[in-house]
Each structure stands twice: as structure tokens, then as C-alpha cells.
Length: 318
Length: 260
Image 1 (cartoon, each protein chain N blue to C red):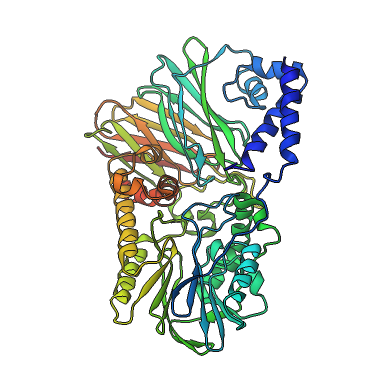
Image 2: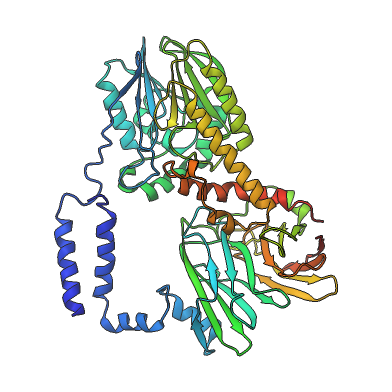
């Protein structure tokens, strides 16, 4: 009987192997540029975690069609993504890409850089250092999570350093605001002509925030500055790093609420004498439990943030 | 086909198992290991030889099924439902150093929380020996990206840890849902010796006693216990401050009081 079953299983396997449904099909991210405001477009990623179905298309990237060329904001999670992004941009405009800007050093924001190796790639100094230090480890991890979508992807380092303040590129006036808290350096770009603010991963909309390199106190301070920017007369639209664009500061408040709850939970749990496994087992409050990937991000964040809360709570010993 | 990749992989795994010679498959069944680990028969020989052994649900081993950080995998061992536990050994089947920790509950119940380093996804088990000499085994699988045993300790990057080596901080809780709990953290790099140029350097004995000198528990950590280890004990009764003392494998000793 066992042999019969194994023969049947092998037969099914052979049939499936011949089917075009196997594997991640054609590795097409189906990127379609979504107009945000005027000549500003975005590719909106899914509010999921990296997997072999989405190929890492979980991030928002964007571009501005400026008078003398295209300004690309973040390049996505893989070489394939970068190439497909460039094709999708070419479907909108004949202008050449003038510059790529990486808003921070997490892999979904820069691993498409290879597709733009012929143009300047710019980032804050700390972001450049982060990509140089952690880039290969990040890429390795994405090969593990996204599989063959990553084929051929290697780290392409940024080639220029950005600093805070006015920045004229391709005939466009941008305002660069250097913040931190999600990572050691988080760049916010304000495009004054269109009124669009590109917040990078300082803001998550309708998706639980990630915290592997977070300094939450700094992050909350950065959110206050961002919210102030949305009160400027010219503000029209906020593009978060993950989740839908918004015409108000609601996603900023949502991100702040999650982070505030998360840090309070870590602090209170440590004070109450909970072990890390006790903290992991706690149910999420209803207002956060329904956010996409909330349970997974909570679990990851406990690993990132609880040890520090614990150290503080146990600090009284001799 | 929502999961075009994962589904055939599962089928492939089943097919592979089906292709094994029937004798091997039967041996796997007979090992009785609920975690179906290929390493179990070796682990059993190495740690328990011919001693009587049962898989026992009263030995609870709690860990996240997916651990975010392979250098800090939280583990809670609770064998307090099993009477007469004199020794507990914690083992990770697929670690390069399989022995993680031993503890000897005396006045305290057979309960200990701590964190460990995992080199790859692995079963993590606790075996509790009762007075009659029987080993009672519980365990769970932990999935992780791995590399936890061969990555340098974070503190090793700075010289800061040297001035704080063996510093103990801790607290006891006398009210609330965690009344009777002791938590303590010890500053120590817990180097495994598997990082080139960094010899094994780890805490190997920790004693916890009450003010009258009655021992609550003795703990023997090994290399896989995480850097700057944090231990959670349940004292049960609420009976004044506790004293903790111990040493590492280089002979550095510590002594501290944990106030109530």
C-alpha cells in the first residue's frame, strides 16, 4: 500500500512539474505607474511581508518627471524590479533618468539600484554607510525570502552624498529633510512643485511598521516634524514607504499610535516581570490586531525592542 | 494555485519520505520522537545512554516557532507539573554545540526562562530527570535564519563589556500575576569559541540561594546561552532577598544580592 501511495505521489509530482503554474511564473511585478499629482508617479507595493509570490513588491517607489529628466525615489527590492521599474517609467516619459535617490538603507529601497548603475545614485551619508555595511547581508536574506525573483541582484552602492536643505536636480527644486528613527538615517523629500511629501519608511499606512533598526524615541520626534510639514500651505499628498498615499496626516498618526503602544507594551511588560515568551504570547489590542502583518511585526519587534526595556526594568540590582 | 511554489515542495518532501527504504522509515517511526528529528537517536545515546526515557507533555518547552533573532531565541522550560525533578538538561539537536544548559531545581520549582543562540532551525528539547532516574522529555521546533553560534557577540565589538563583566542586575516581584518571580541579567559575552580568534568564554555556574543559605536553584549554562543572559525563575514563595553567585570558564566570579 505504501508503495502504491508513493507511486501516486510521484505521478502527481511529475504532472505538476510539467505545469506552467509551478514557480513564480514570469517574474513580472506588473508595475503600473500611478499618477499622484501633476508629474509625480508612484508604484504602490503590497502591504505584505517578502515572499516568493510577491517577489518583494511590498514597497512604494516613485518618480518625478522633472524638466531635464526623471528623478527616481527608491529602486525596489531586486534587479528585476529595478529593470521593470525603468521600463514602466519609459512608458510614461521619453526623458532619461537623471538621478536615483535612496531614502534609507533597507533592502527594498535600494536593491534595484543595479538597473540604474549608469546614473548618479544619491543618499544621506549614514544611508551610504549602512548600505555598504549591511547591504550584502540584506540581499542574502531577500534571496532566502523572495527566492528566484532576486536572481542576479547585487548591491549597487550609492555614488553621491545628500545633505539636508534645498536640492536642485534636473530642473526641479526639492527640499531634503534628514531625519532618523526608523533607521539611522531617514530621508524625507518634499517636492514643492507638486506638494508631494515622500516620507520613506518613517510612515506606514495600513500596515504594521517594521523596527529592526529603530530608535523609537527618535522616530516619534521625526513623525512630529513630518506632521508639521503636512501643515504647510503647499502640502497636497503624502507617499508613505508602505501602504496607500494619503491627502492628510492620518498615516503619520497611525504610525505614531502603533509605536507609542509598542514601546509602552515593552516597558510595562518588563516592569511587570514578564519573560520574552510571555510578551510574545500577549494578544494584540483590537485596534492594531487587524492591521496587515500586525502579528508578525509585533513578534519581530519584541525581539528588537524588549531586551532594552528589560535592561531598564532590571537596572536596580547591584 | 495560491501557493504555486510551496505546495509542490510539500509534495516533494512526502515523495522523498516515500522513497526511503521501508526499513529506515520504520526505524524513524520507532524512535518515537514526536519532533521527528534525524538527530534524535544520536542525542539520546550521547546524553541519556541506556537510562529510561519517556516523552512527557508535563515537560513544557515554550519558544516562538519562528525566531526573529537567532542570537536571542527565547526559551521557557516548565517541568513544574512533574513531581520530583532533580535535573533538567536543555539540548538543541542541530546546534554545533548541542548542550545548551543544565539546571538543578532545589527549593524552586523546575521552571527556567532564558535565551539561546541557534545556528539553524532545530528542535530544542528539555529533559527532566526525576528522583527515580527516569528522563522526561519535552521539546519544540524553532525555525530561524540561523548563524547565531558563529556570529560575534555584539558586546565584543566594543571594549565596554570588560568593565562591566559579570555585573548582575535583577528584581523580584512580590505582587501581581508574576508574584514570586525572580529575573536577573548578567553581563557576559558568552562567546561560543566558534568565531575565529575568539576563544570560548562563558558563564558555567550560577547559584541562587535565599538569605538563610538555602539553595533555590543551580544553573550550568554552556556556550549556546545568549550574550548578557537573562534568567527568569519562579520562586513561588515570597521570602526576602536572594543571593546569587557564580563564575565563568576563566574563573571570573560574581556575587550579588537581588532585593525584594
